[in-house]
Structures are given as structure tokens and as C-alpha cells.
Image (cartoon, rainbow, N blue to C red; front, side, top):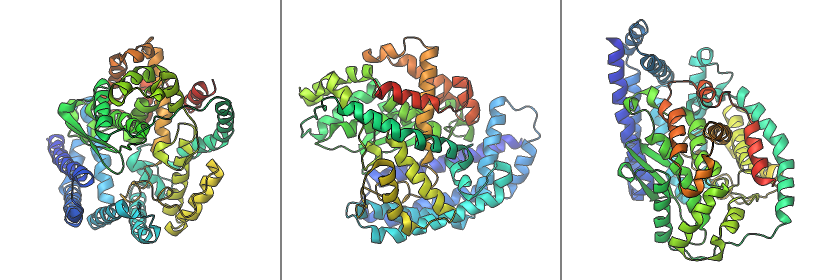
Length: 499
């Protein structure tokens, strides 16, 4: 039976991906710097092995035969669809290019960890140039092979599709244009309203890392994180990784800024809960994967923004802060709410508020899009970055590379095409949240008592357990009754920040 043989093949691929995930986590969290070159070769070899499995000529016959099998269940048919997409994408990219990308991104990311603190753009640029060159080569190969089948209009669409299946420039550009037209005036109105009130008090540190970590772990427990199947660690850039049965999340703590580390934990816990909640019977198959990074980011932002910065959540959080960190007056719930909903243009994307965050994403989207399409070069990034930051947020980044174009891990690690997912995720999160509170009256009222299980059950039923059984539009339609509608996100911003 050809379908059954394909399931075995993709099960093997899932085990290789499991190993890569753990090697990547160890590289970011535990590995000594001297091990990077050897680790890079090992991870590149795993990538090549995966490509070789998918590029086996015998798979063509297996897919042809499986497509004619009539006794497949609905989930098996959906799995065959997702297998086919993954197979054809792998066929489009030569294994030599896969290996070159793995090695280049490993080298660039490892160098970034020391070059960024040193503000050393000069040495970083040629490494990043190689990463982008290879990403463009991969995009060209994908577009040449799959443009008609996948609906690509250009090379950059092919990269977007890797991270957010179903998205494209044609879908993203109008949405981002709407935000660029709407958010500047909304931001000014919010700032005027905010500036008419007393500024919130900042917690006075230092707050020992071990106490912040204990707080984070108790909070993760209340958010449903299973420590028997996952762990929390510290690294240079917060991330969620591992596998559903062994989820690994990280954050970074600052002894003088308890807000940053805690919100990072809430965000990454949202990612991990999605992974842990994927359909158990399909974890080693493509249909059991998360439905793209736009949906993945919707889960982290549902936790961080829709829940984590809501008034009931903050009222429940305040006693935990006092329990672990002391009776600082800044831990009063009213003050915390003002802090967690403070809007202020800043340089760092991961610390940005909900209102200014989309402009950070749009900046990166426009840059990586233009480099991929040959409209710009990597050497143009610092100047264009500064121009965009001045235009969008009124900030100057000249000469400040570490807080400008070197701040994110995504480009050095080869994730070109990922950034649009963040703002699409914020929109998805707002739409999902509004649908959830309509379907479960009173769910939001239970947040202040940590009565979160009805919310988690709804997310599990409508998002987590669905994997890729449905496409993105169908998933959102099933959960909310409509496809992506940006009015929910803009309405959320006005309701939270214009009161």
C-alpha cells in the first residue's frame, strides 16, 4: 500500500527533525562556543539526509499510486496533500543548496551572538550577504518549480509560503498598507491621551534572576505548561523549540527589568502550548504540524497580548509578583496595568507595544522582500533601516547596529520570509479572541481567578488539535466564521488604548 509506505518515510523525516531541534536548542543554550563548527556540520548533514530521503526517485511512483487509493480517511487524504507539498518543495531545492544554507546560517548566527554586542556591522554584513544570496537562490528554485501549482507571483512569495502557507505579497501588502495608513494617527492619539496621565512607576531592581525564574515557572504552570514534557532555559534571544513531547522554551532576564523577561515567558509559553496540543495521532506526519507561523504567532500573541496584558490577567499576576519579588509599589495592579499597556516608540522589536509593533514588522518585511526581489542589497540595510524607523516611529538608529538591523536572530539563522507572520499573527489572535468570548460567555471573566481551562479547551478544539487538516483560510473560517479580517485587530487596539 503506497500511502502506508509514505507514512513510514515521513515518520523517518520527523525523527531527523526531532534530532535537529534538540541540537539547535543545545547550540543556543548549552553548547560551548568552540563546538559551533562541528555542530554546524552535523546539523547540515541531517538537513542533507532529509533532502536525500525526499528526493528518492522511488517516491514519485509511491505518490502516484497513493493518489489513486480510494479507502483513505479524511485525515489520511489531508496528510497526503501535505506530504505532497513538502515533497515537491524538497525536490525543487538541490541538496547541495540545502547543505550550503545550513552551514552559512549556522556560521552567521554563531557570529551574530558576539558581533551584535560589539555593534560590529562591518564583519556581520558579508556573512549576512551569503545567507541572503542562498535564500534568493532557494526562492528562485522554488518559484521556478512551483509557481503555477502554489500560486507564486514572484520569488519572495515562495519564501513566505515556507513559513506561512497560503500567504503571499498580494495578501500581505494591502493589509500592511492599511496599517501604515491607520496606525500613525492612532499612535499619536494614544500618546496624547497617555501623556495626559501620570507616568506609571517602574519596579526598582535589582531583582535576582533566580527569583524571576521561580516567578516565571509558577506562571507557566498556571498557563498550562507541562514541565514533565518541557523545560525553560535562558538564552540570548527568546525562542520556542523542541518537539510536542519535549518542548523547549527560553527567555532572557534582566535584573533591572522584570517586565521584559516575564512577557517573553508568556509569549513562548503560548507557542509551546500550541506545539503540545497538536493532534497526538499525527505528530510524526505533515498533517500534524502547526498551521504555519501566522497561526503559531497567533497563539503566542493570544497568550501575551490578548490574555497577558488584559486587566483581569494583570490583577491575577500582581500577587505573584509580590510573592516572588517583594512589595514594590510598582506591583500594584493599577500601576502594572499602566506599565503593561504603555505605548512608547522604541528601537527593539521584541519589547515593542502592540501599537508600534506592526511598524517594526513592516520595516523588516519591506527590506527582506526587496533584497529577495533584487530591489535592494544587504549593504543598503542600515540606511534603509534608519529611514524607515524615522518615518514610522520617529527614531534615529544611525550607527546603532545592535539595536537596529542586528537585533533579531531571524536573518542570521536564514529565516527570510518569516517576519510577516508576526503581524498576521497579531491579527489572527485578535480575531480568535473575539470569537472565543462570543462562543464562551464569561470566559474572560474567569481570567482574574486563573480559571483559564475553558479558554485552553476552545483553543485546543479550534486550533491546536487541527494541525494542518484544514488550510489556513478554512481553519480561520471554522474557528471564527470568516477569513482574516483586520478590523478585529484595529478594534482591539482602540478598545484597549483609547479609553
